[in-house]
Image 1: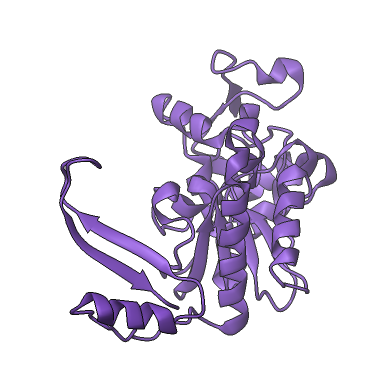
Image 2: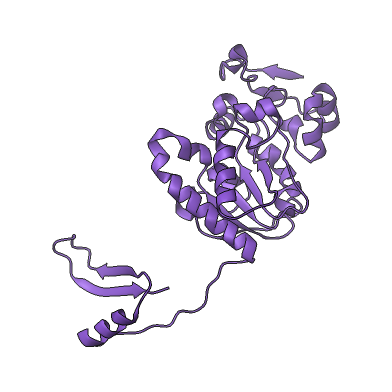
Length: 287
């Protein structure tokens, strides 16, 4: 019923998982749960394990941890080695960095942990594995796992989507570098996500932990802090700003003299390079 495709990769040889499988169309969820009882809980949550190439991979499923009430959820992309070993999401280095950032931001009670894909892909790179599956015309693990999000994202009051894969899984966008740190709405997509859910896209903690990208750690913590503040207060604080337009140097000097807090400065110039451009406007933000 399940045929291993050993040419796809060599993970079966080193114990990190099984090669992709070709799923017989006659395999039902019930039969998959019977053949692979470790997938029974995921199937009960709606996962289409019977139509997933990671069925029987031996690297999951790692089931979500969801407290009641589910006020805050961190949705990562897939389990790491320690998550597979322990059987819980976000307990390895990425989880520790995330937990520290959440705690530092002022969140002092339980928060939920989940992954867009419940099994670890070969080499722990779900994006490359999804590409491999498309090339071999195998089903998408991301699509097969998506129904279980009804029990995590669908119930959460606020969600952190960690990395591009999690962002794509909930349909809130695809470019993490473009939207990270920006409050978004996870769109409603019944029956998986019955209502829109407020969310904060953040960089993946594993990405930030790499030596090449460690300089992004303050960005990661700042985005988490912003999301926690919104989750606690119930929404971003914003009101229409007031404007002062200086018409003289003396007027500008009086305005600046009255400010006691830090100022943000923005300039608008022509596109002629830093040494030849024309200066059009200087703006000061006071709050």
